[in-house]
Length: 139
Image 1: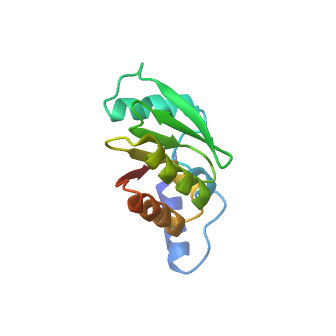
Image 2: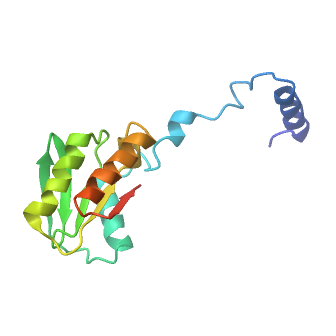
């Protein structure tokens, strides 16, 4: 068990401007990806199906869009891209799917860590919104 006095000392050191020790620093790389490393893409897809209230036996189709794997679920209503690098070309390809498939409602889910930064994620949402896809989420 940690010694409370040691924690007080560490807090005092930080208040005085001393950097935290190695044991006090959080591992930022571990907190970047919010999907557990032992989860497969199928695990994440099934979780999404459950969260959206879709049947687990619903048909899925995997497509290659600009070198990235994209899963089309159900009556083309849910598009999932769990790529580690979601570039604007992939987003534009997903937007083009809306015209090709012409679903009544289309939802898109990306892996949050797949975007370079918040600006890229916002741009992706705006590109999809221009294509008539308003429900864009990231996990």
